[in-house]
Image (cartoon, rainbow, N blue to C red; front, top):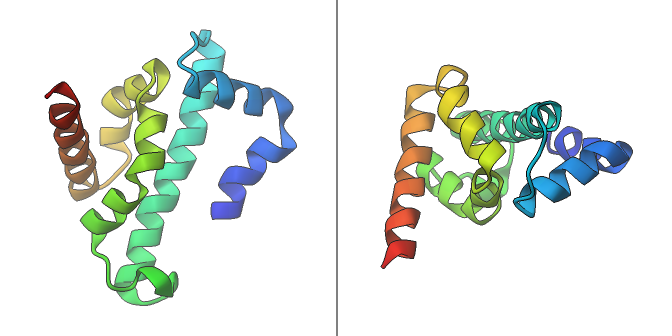
Length: 121
């Protein structure tokens, strides 16, 4: 699934441009924001699925000692950048809570809140 997420960028120059512009916090039009959000959604689905596989011992042996919170904190430097954009936060706020488990959403929100508090000091 990891390869699926990132191969989209390698194979689709337009999506790669949207991704780059989104991370640069440039304004995306409505269609571009949907495509950016879809890419983020695919990545977050990968994270949640990875946590399930780790929990039941099916894969990602290098992460076997991590619980979901540790796994999310480990990946935060990357996924935090994805959400620290207008399109990313709009997707997280409006759509993600209905697509992911309550525990997953709660932990992501806790990490985001903790980081915002740290940055505002």
